[in-house]
Image (cartoon, rainbow, N blue to C red; front, side):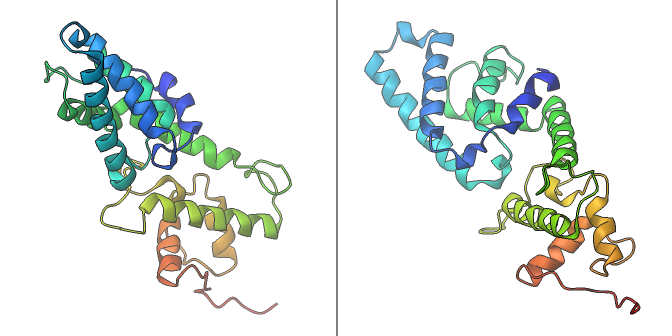
Length: 226
């Protein structure tokens, strides 16, 4: 397993948002039956029935459990290949739903995957296009900066899965979603200069305060009148 192989997969659709996830999972699971030589002892109908059941259960869990909120659809095939090759542990000698959940956990928590996700998040924040087509690190207008902050807020809310908010997203290793990181500090400096963040405050703390204010950005520092 290699972070250079994983990183290109992270630009794809989030698995929990995919309308094709069941079909993708079912295809990969059917392939496992050949890998485990089950196709010699089971009928095609039995394999299809088992694969459909496991795909349905996996689909439900991936879409409802925030531990899988950062998984991309494009990563499904890759992690199944890695599992078959033994890169995700060999505790299970027989094909089962428990084994696939173990592969998912091993993959999402692997150092290679975490490193790839961290690098991708840094690049995404640095290269996020502005309204004028410039990279976010360029000289942006006031309007473009506010639009960027609003996008970060929306992404942060999605990554926290506010509908249930039972668990923090596993989007990065220290539990702070990537949208709350503000790599490069451009948004933080912009907000502090305008009195919307306290000195020394972290960007995700500003976003948490905005969530408490039902999405409204309120100033916290009275600036001198010019």
